[in-house]
Length: 132
Image (tube, rainbow, N blue to C red; front, side, top):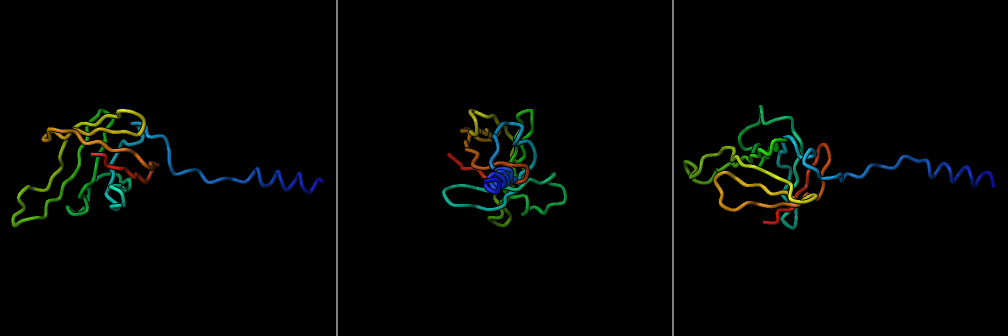
């Protein structure tokens, strides 16, 4: 009987891995997110980086920066055409959380905002689903 109690205690006391998904509050998005991969079902994964300093222009493609004051920008690398029809650069805008995990970004040059849902978010990894 004592053996069962000890075994049960050992099993219940094991460290369990923390889930990768965390609450998707505005403070969790603050910083730079570099494109990692295009996934299925209109999902995109990003990795956290300290800044865009030292990155080649093609490495910045689709990179996003979220600031706590609502400022947002995304880097667009336009390699189509010679010279490219649209120059590669950061496109600024604003962002806001509409509801838990649902984010709206409004680019300064765009008429319609874009929306995405946070699928996964932790200190180093972000997966989003573009809604429109």
